[in-house]
Image: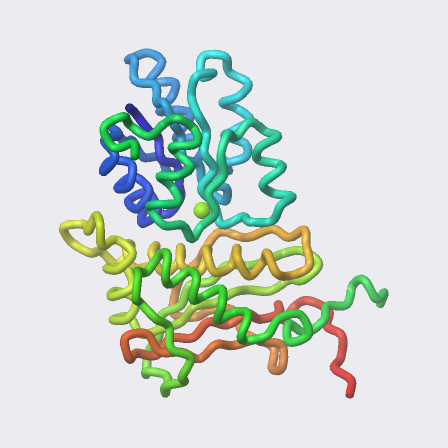
Length: 131
Length: 164
Ligand SMILES: [Mg+2]
């Protein structure tokens, strides 16, 4: 399985990417939404499209909500699951993200187990590690 | 000046116990299991580094984390414990302290009147100045070293004068 980890914090890219890599994911990082769209456009040409994108909300250039809207408006990315991973924790923000097309929502700070549980809900826990 | 344009001091919206509870959660999940923030003050070291995020909404201000450079490096090591870089660069430390401020800021924002927007984290030796009496501060130690978390009103925001 493949995952795109989008966060402006390099520490957070390592943390989230590390959890996913430990689960067997092939991970690519992006520092903001525009860079992530570039990875997807390139992936469309080369055959590397992710099963999952973990998306931070507050980022420079293009934020997570704009990224989610852009992905949802492109039928080529329909099969990709979108999981917000963000410190935005108010109900109104969660509703906005889900309405824009995010499938799951993880609030920072989180534990690896919490992320694993959300992946299981999405059916994205690789078979070999599923409980 | 209208009532809506006047900002209440942060002390009327938040107390140190709430900030400490937010920080405890962040420390346990992000810094590591068993990594406790002890709410006992220590003298500030000669030089500190800080990271902060601005909150803009019905309440405007910042959430600031400050500690010694060596403490910031140790915190970065904890955050990256599962995937440590070969060499820890100054940018890694700035970034990790910034993300700590970001996560603290987001969770503090959630208990303040909203809706509010969170700015991008910034880091450096000179955090934004606080207005006297308009800050909620947790003086703590982590691994026996000085660390403070401050939630402070923006100095430029119109403030309600405190009345007794
Ligand atoms: Mg961010």
